[in-house]
Length: 225
Length: 193
Image (cartoon, rainbow over all chains, first blue to last red):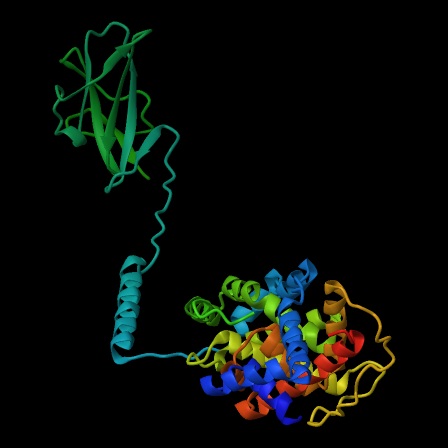
């Protein structure tokens, strides 16, 4: 590269001082060879600047995006990645105390909520003529029946009501049948029917009788569960 | 094209978002710089398909190495450097059918002019551009790289120093020699000039 070419190059890069630029332009004016060299280099610079720009194709962008996008994993791969991903467990004293408190409360709460043992309530078998109650003390409902078509009133007196004939009246139903249903606890009872408030008779349907010590017999009722 | 000074703050924000695995942000960086990178690669390798492949490689490399990008430099400068290195690697290893270039060769024979051309041909504007494209491809890679960055991409010598890692005087000499070779090639096609 001779001196002329070098001065043209420096002129193109704006590396000349103002004085050097004046001297260069004067030299260009008087030296056709230098002028031709300068114009050729100016043409290269100008044409290079005007070269067409290439627009990247859509394929370029789509391929690049595909390469940058992480592959989509299936359900199993995602689960596996979550489970097998290495993790660092970090804790501090406050966090550990909080976790311990939560665990203690959970254990105590669970202990108090769960019954100590399971109690099975037995199912009572009752005779066909009784209705068993499910109260705290077993009670058996006993139905007493007496056929007295001519009676005006019928009541029952026995051990269960203090032999009071006015406490437990029987109710009349069709056909002269008198009935009463009384709750009794399991046990053995004696009783008699009182007809029209004056006639005392034993239950003709009773399966057992007992002497009352006054020459009569009381009906005996065994109440069982 | 000259690096846009106003684009850098936006580039920095997009880089920060990309570092948080925001793929859309990196997509925007691609949109903003794809044309420059593809054009640089095209001027270097002279083949559009190869240029797009190299530009893709440059963006992928940038994406993977984004955590190493220092915020005190421009993203565009960093990206140009990656792309320039990709092009030089391609020229060293894959120049199809012609064997690798000796990229370290600094000197070029001044007689390396297309003497087979017919000097009487007067060139139209379009022909000048076409001839210039071809003449650029005949430049030694280091001259070509410097000339393209300076006069096609419009970068300053300071930006080129940062991209290529070469001092300014060396770069100027490469640009001088590149311009000179190109002017001789074009002048030989149009002796009237």
